[in-house]
Every structure is written in structure tokens, then in C-alpha cells.
Image 1 (spheres, rainbow, N blue to C red):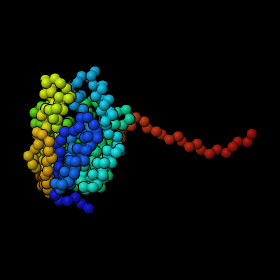
Image 2 (image 1 turned 180 degrees about the horizontal axis):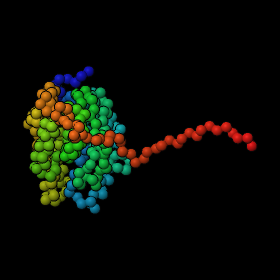
Image 3 (image 1 turned 135 degrees about the vertical axis):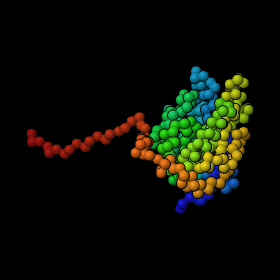
Length: 323
């Protein structure tokens, strides 16, 4: 069945539970139910929302990060797990496509991972941020080209990138070349200061215009008590405020509804899918406006693995010799 002509999208700006994965998971399930009550078909949560974004890594020197980093290991999400099954169940119950950011634990490493659950509860995509940014490189490993993938879902073709991956134009072009219709984006929020929110807005609007797609972006939020719990120094606390820009952008680069830059809430907007063709009629970056004989992208989509196994060759049958 083709996607509906109008998709109702939700972008969630929300504070995690900085003390437990279970607490944050309950917030995820509550938000899905809340958005379902508003008729949402598609919902996006902030970057690594479960259990929480590692804000500590932005304000603590590496020598002091050990305890908090180890605690993040304990609270991180394994895929699959009870947590992923709970989100899949909620997606299936409400017939909603869910994009959730998690700290994924894979044995001895953590990854910044985006999970896309289709409306039937199927995990349509698990992808890892290809290059963690600045302080994040102390926390997460790197993803690979296999995750740069657009997936068919109940709401159309969905692609996803996390935070400053949007400053990698080739990563964005990879999704554009796969004809994404709805782009899911998320950032941590409550980080860096007001300039971060301004940069996010520019970036999201530019991608919508260049890709000719809808962009649904979610940023996180920290309360004053949470900020104080991360670091007691008021000077460093300034780096844990503002920087929020939860927004829903049309293919014409416009806000579908006013953005959310302060506090918690859920943005709801109806996406008229005909606007994609309206934009691409004028400028299709990977179609009639492209020049692949001059410029094209080489994308290595093979999963990265620390070990490849070659099966031993079966020895040819030999007649026993006469002794």
C-alpha cells in the first residue's frame, strides 16, 4: 500500500532521565502514546536519547570521565533487547514509524545509533554515526557506510543522520541519491549555547531545500537541576544551556510549524507529500539538476568488520595409493 498523501509528523523535545535507562524508556513510550493521540504517523526523538546523551563528556576532562563513561556502558542499549522490543511494540500498537536515538552497546564499545522502526514494529534500520564529533570520540566508536541507507516505510522513504553528520555533504548526498522523502535528524540540545540552535536551523532548512524532502528534527532538553547534576561550576554550566531547535521543515525550506527552542514539548505538523514533486520539478539534485558524468559519489556500503572468515577449501577426493 503506498504512503498516505499527507503524513502527520511529530518531533519530540524532551529531557531524559539521567539516572536510568528505564526512566528514559518510560518517557519514550509515553511520548509515542501522546503523539498517537494527536494522530501522528511518524515520530523522531533526540540524539542518543536512551539512556541520555553523554553531556558529561563536553564539560569533564578525559581523566575524570571514567566513572560516568562506565555508568553509560551499564545503562546503554543492546540491539535487540527488551528496550527495542518495547519500542517495536509501541510502533506496532499505534501504527507509527519511530526514529529513536540510543547509546548502543556492542560488547566492549558504545555507538551513537539511530533506530528506525516501521509501523508494523519491524526494525527497518540500525545505523551508527559515521564520525563522532570532537569530545564524542572519547565515548563512541565509528559507524560504517552500510548505515547510509534510505528505507521504505509506511510513511515513505526515510533516511536519517545524527547531528554534525549533516556537515558531511557526501553523507547527505548519499541519502539524497536514494531519494529520501522524509529525513529524520536529531541533535543533543542543551549544548554549546544559542549559536548551536541557530546553526541547526540553517542546516535543517538547507538540507530540506537541497534534498527536496521534509526534515523532522528533534533536540533534547535539560532542566536546571539536571545541568547542576552534570557539573557544579556555573561557568561550565553555560555550555549545557540553549542550543535547542526542534523543527519540522518543508521541501521549500520553510518551517511547517514554529520551532521549539525552549522547554519540553511535541511539535505536530502535516506533511503534504505533493510538495516534494513541487520542489523537485524546479531542482532535483540527484536527477535533472545532477551531472553524474562530471561529479558523482562513490559509496562503500559494505559493513565494517574486524574479522572476515574464508572457509577452508574442501580437499579433492584422492584414490588411495597401492602400498
